[in-house]
Image 1: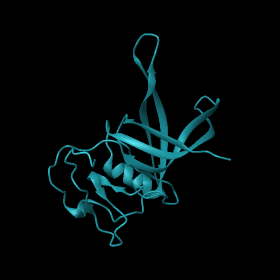
Image 2 (image 1 turned 30 degrees about the horizontal axis):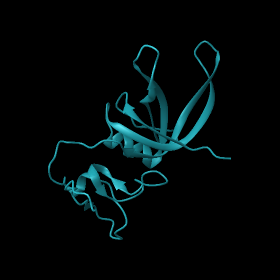
Image 3 (image 1 turned 180 degrees about the horizontal axis):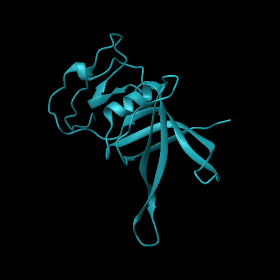
Length: 159
């Protein structure tokens, strides 16, 4: 069976880090994801997708993402049954995040930020950063677990 989801949208609120009784980190948040088409009124239709992240991925999201930031989430769909305050049975469907990526760039700094602001390479989600670290720095492939600045794009085509 295949259960794989990739979504891209903007955070509707700041993620809040919580911990289970057994000490596992968890954060839940919602992404506003625009559809590729407009509705009958000519406006873009937006879906609000609930996402939950666990352990290192939860810590990464709560540390580096804030309301309004664009995020790409790779994960799987999961449904869960629960009971509301009135005793009614409810079902929720959410994305369980395996890994989360920046979908935009922060335009605040012109130079590389201090390395101590970033966690060690890898370790966030099952797939880590997927080869990308915060702020446009590569977090893998060099064998030394250091962040390396990506080459700046001069806008020239290679042909």
